[in-house]
Image: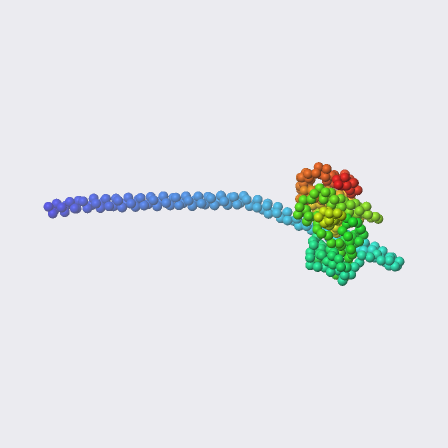
Length: 383
């Protein structure tokens, strides 16, 4: 029995060994297959990534000329803008030189007139006041492009005092301010802001005028105007402009009509007192006013009120008529003027007669606009 068992074991062991070797070989083969598949998958992934990278490189290569073209266009645009700015600066310098020459020529004429009057024992500057007679407070009433207005005192009365801020006190602006003084000293009309006097001694010049209660722009910001108020205030403005346009010996053009430059005061009723007071208007700011006979080299004040011909040298009194039409529309609809919405804003006017009147004032051709005499006659019919 033992011998039989031993013989059996001898026969079984080789078979078992063969099975184990076969199983081991199968495991190795399976592992090799898995490794091979994994390597193929990894290689395919890397190949795909490489293909994607080359595609991106192709895209960048194709876009590079576009980037170059864009950069070139930007560079050309910057060059054009630089050339345009340089041209504008040269034009501004030339304009300032022309204005300087004009102011110098005007000052020369004034000095000659002063000399001639002095020889006859007369004074040509009766509006000159001493700086010591003017007390300027810290109460600021308003400011423009180069001048600031403060409340002050002169000869015991409350007044408005206009002066150039130190930061803007260039030689050119000082000459502009002196020109405003010269303009104001030549004007006398109930519908113009009353000029009291000015200083011309050392330091920044001061222009002293009567003190008003408020401005048309501020009033429009507070409430709408009645038809009667629109008629009366616009008529005051028209009368002031008509005076300037008819001034002798040389007519004047204001060139800066706006709601900010129409100041208001209240005229009390004779019977009912202050409660029935009526707002009345006075035109202020002669900063851009010029005599008609002078060459127009400076763009008028606020562009929102400017006529189409405002940027040319062919300016007439009709430029004020255009600005007046915009002002009248603003008084009726209580909106700031917008050149791009001009027709739309005029259409908002509820008074058809005034609307048609405004359209006449806003004609593109200056010859088609009425003059201030016709405007006054028309406005008087609305009262």
